Image (cartoon, rainbow, N blue to C red):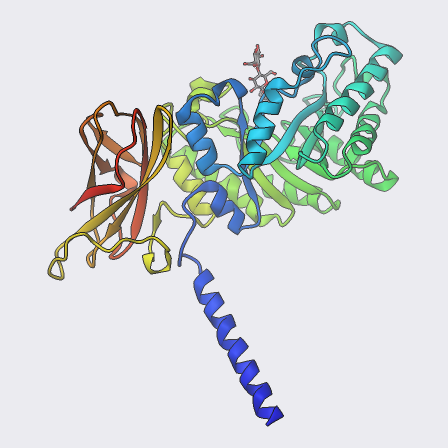
Length: 453
Ligand code: G2I
């Protein structure tokens, strides 16, 4: 009796395990956002954020939909946080940090000690006065954000470009070669839970500069200087292409016993070439176990520090580019969900039709506030695969669509028709795809009329 009970238990748990594996099978219910897809790979997908753009609903809509980590683009820099010596201003950075935490997003702190973007008073200091000011700055800022930061860029861009492998000459470097480790020790004391990173550019492949960083990090590990991660900015363009040994370079740093992170990714270009390069960079991180995540340096091309190079994943209107789809697919996500039977809210087609006739249904989820709303529309194919679809939504009077993603809108008031874009027209039988739009005024109802092609 005891034995048969034991066998029964084993069989039961075996059956449960098999069930769990089936639910998690690749593609069964693939993630449809960068953040969710990266999370399934145990990683974050982040972006640089500018506080003054958060009131733009297109910007914040994409931010909250797609990203699981944020880096303040400028708000934590020395000139922003200590414009007058000893007087700290955290308002803009706090806005970003508190909003991120409320949304369950990680925060990368950027940057505690850097030769650039110093306030005028620090630029004019040297020697012991500057060293003390630097330590005080690191301590005060890291203390202010203690417990809220996943990873800090403690020191940024401290090595020279070119073949010398030397430290960059700067007022901080002239306070003594130990300024970097002093900054790391101060950061650890102020926030013991944050990962402490060294962050730089032109260190993405193996070269004289990355070799010099590698030597410094090896030395820090050997001497117990607190360092947990190395950030690779990864600003790529024709002059500075994705290096062929990118993955190998990330791996050699990881092999020192640290995490590595892609911290400021952007890739100038367009179309398939850009998409392929983004996919390759993403693959490199996925191939390195200790690559924690990827941060892109802005959301839309127009948000970029080098906007003319259109280096980001969303166009100026907030529509995902080919590069977006390439990154999402490389992370194992998809712009369509092939198996809606796994999905909790898959509506049945609104009209029953004979087999072989295309049909679809559309349901609308609304996130509304006073004066505006974001609608996420799920299109579900009937028993026959779609080649395209149009979902019509009727807006109340006083409402207008201001922005659309993953679909093309016809009109902006009254009844607005949303038609698939190129990549999400095909939907497998019983599969789903999502698009969204943003509007001003009162929100529409949650029903939509779907027309299949
Ligand atoms: O230069 C690209 C990045 C390289 N690695 C370190 C990052 O911190 C750096 O980011 C850029 C920001 O994207 C720019 O937005 O750093 C620049 C310099 O701090 C930022 O530019 C500054 C302008 O120089 C200021 O004039 C301007 O007031 O942006 C500020 C805010 O728009």
